[in-house]
Image 1 (cartoon, chains in turn blue, orange):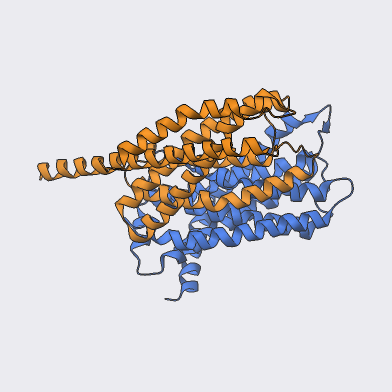
Image 2 (cartoon, chains in turn green, brown):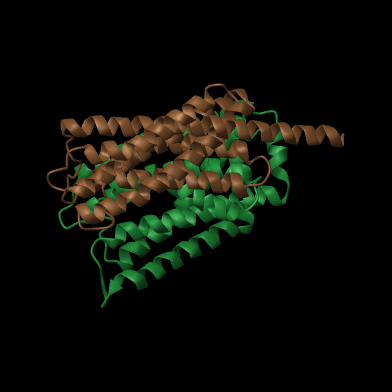
Length: 226
Length: 218
């Protein structure tokens, strides 16, 4: 089987299972919404949001709900003992990684469709004025975050105390993604938008994506072998 | 025990005993006065921390590529050194910052980078400690990712900082200070070599004991 066909089949399987129960989708979306709400209580004073908190809250909600989705995506494989079956299949291991990555990214895109308008609404943030740039930042940031996250979640699916270890490992490594995402988005939201700064942050995100996807494709095979 | 071990221990002990004398004799810095002396131990600890991080990453690459147990011993040693010496740096840094800049913490690029790298290797140790069997391989992945992350954290924090007013504080070293500084760096690096040798030996013996137990049970 070709690489792309394996990617397509595994991803289709994951999305089909998810579409039947919609468990991860619903729980993650509502988790992200509650996240935004909790931050609203922290950073809205006398009816006015403080400074440019909108960008930060958007990215924190993305990171937190992403962690949840990553954990659940592999928990499902573990509970039904299908991870071993997947790993035993005579296909390229990196194809499994890419399939999982795309699956989680699809879920996170669905979450973002809900929380971007919500942040715009709650924090009076003009998120839609530079929509294409924002979409590019969110896409590149999500790729970077899930590239590292899928790798770690896959590794941890066999480890003890995996629920706590996933964020503990994931957040220090994704610090550049969060900084670049937040600052890039904030550059678009300020009184005089600065698309040049946003582009600079976008290029940082893209190089992060390239480096970490390459690394993950290389390390996935040896790390997932017993 | 390698024959080099004892002379090396004596040398490192002598160097650390002599270091305070050299530091006391170094010229007093013109703006920060006596406080600046912490620099002679603070910066070398960062040197050891980053060397430990890169040792861990390099050994992890070797462990994943070749599967050699020996490389894994080096990886865990590197990570432990990064955590311990990072902690020394994170304690001496704010002490110095309080006196020199008037604040305990500054979101300076070097400080933030060090904190993020330190957190990564604390996470590495947590994974090894609580990840259960087979976590060495997973930890190797974390070590590699953590080291690859260093330039990205550096650039992102640097750009993030430049949006705000910048405080340049890194002192230019006077001629009398340079010698003392490099002497301390050398002492710390030799101490690192010593610790690596001892720690890897311990890890090797531990693996040997495990193997013997397994053979006994068979």
